[in-house]
Length: 133
Image (cartoon, rainbow, N blue to C red; front, side):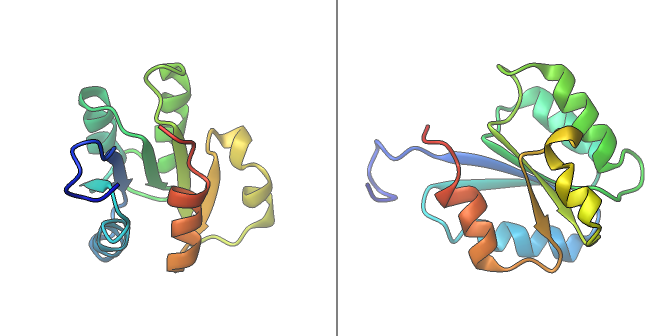
């Protein structure tokens, strides 16, 4: 399928990160993948409001943010239940703590993307590993 094909499935992604440069870089990178649309939120509070209004296939959430941090976003996403929860929740973090890496699922995420991120890692998490819609 191509972008002009009316049968093309659009995957909706929400990037929640308080750093404008990270949001911009993730959005620009994801938009290079065919069939992806990206929304962004500057903090967890705005991100949760957007999730309440829209259905997202994937959410990338920074763990350390002001207002509502990524850990609280993850806790609230767990409470949504499977029908309202995004298909994939990816933690975005500059922390290289091995305990964090080992507890991704326990925290409520499906994968972790380190900062700075590599495009091939982002592609793997969103294109190669994301369940077919």
